[in-house]
Image (cartoon, rainbow, N blue to C red):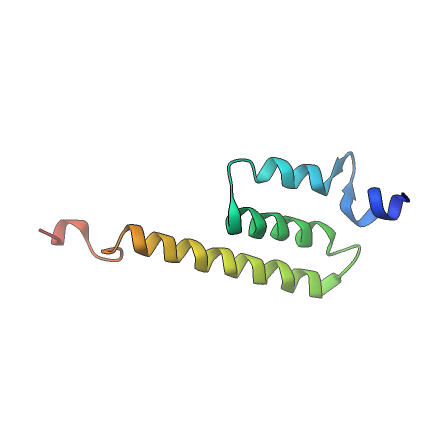
Length: 89
């Protein structure tokens, strides 16, 4: 395989390859949390050398999706969020 497939320049920064950074950053994450985190890293990693503003918009889309997912989980596990805990008796 060619370097454009195995080691594309837009996924390399110094001695670190994007896939290795994603692998480390997603340890302990599963499902949509791992996917969104990996894609956020991917698009912010390569934006300058490949997709420019479009890649930053893609990263933002995945970040918004992750925030929405985590907010939903937080609201389900803490139904009184936003209220002062001392006011609930």
